[in-house]
Length: 399
Image (cartoon, rainbow, N blue to C red):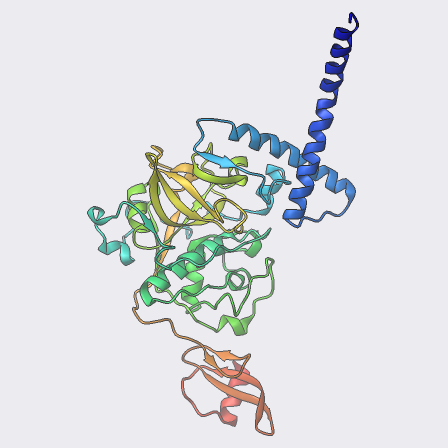
C-alpha cells in the first residue's frame, strides 16, 4: 500500500507530459476534417504542415475570443483559417485610395444630395430596413483571391437601384469591370467604386454576370461583351464622410457602397453576431450596406461581403451602428457612395443576332459572312432598324 501514492504521482506526471501530444493530435484531427470540408489542396506535405501550424494559431485565437463573455460576436475556423493575417490581407481585399488623385471624391459637406435620397426626410426613415426582403439584392458572390472587392460593391449597388427603379433584379458582371475598366481601376490589383460608376456611365451600361461570367483573374477586355448595355445608370454621388445620419437616410432608399477596414484578424474569422471590433479605420476593403436593424439595445448595419457564403452569416456581417465614433466601426462612415438611376423604364435589352451573338440596344445586326442563307459571323452597326447592304458592311469593317 505504501507504494500506491508514488504510482499515482507517476501516472499523473505521465498524463501531464502527454497532454500536449493529445492536444496536438486533436488539432490535427480537426484540421484534417476542416481540410476536407473546404476542399483545400497544398503543393507539398511540408506546406500542409505549415498550414496546420497556422490553423492551430487561429484555433487558439478563435477559442480565446469565443470564451469572452462580454463579446457581441463570435469567430470560427472558416475558409481563411489556414492563412496568417498578413497572407489574408494580401489576397482578399482590394480597395485602392490614391489620396493624391484630385478626381477621387468630394468628401466635403457641400456634396449635393441626389437620387432617391433627395425625396426622403429624416422623419420618414423606418426603424429597420432590409433590401434583401425587397428582392433588391443578388445572392452572395465570391471574389476569390482577386482583389476586386470594389467591383462587387459597385455592381451590388447598381443591381439594387436597378431593381428599385425598374422592378428587375439582374446580376451584373464584375469581370467586365476587371477587364475593361482600366482608366483608374486596376482589376485584381484594386480599385474604387466612384471610378466604376463613371465607367458604366461612359460605357452607357454594363453586361450581365451570366453573359460575362466571373473568372477571378485579370483578362483582356471582351469588347463584344462591352457593347451589351443591359443595365444603365445616370450618375452617382458620395455621402459626406462622418455623416452617419445621412448614411442611414441613404440606406433607407437603396443599397449603398462603402469602404471599410476588413483586414483585422477578428474580421477575417468572423462568424456571427454584431461586430464591434477592435478595428482600425484605414480603409482597404469594399462592401455593400443592404440594410440596418437593432438587437438587444445595439444598432447595426447589414453588410453584404464578397467572400462567399462560407464566411460570416452566410456571406454577411452585422456591423455596429451608432458606435459613438464619427468614422464608424472599421471606418464604415468614411467612404460611402451610390449610383443614381432616374429612368422608370426597364433597362434596354441587347438585340439577339443569333444564339451566341448580340448587339446593344440602338444597334442593328449585320451579317458579314454567310453560306446558303446561314450567317456565320455577325457585326453590329451603330444605327437602329437599318437594312444591311454592302455599303453597310464596309462601314462595319471600319468600326
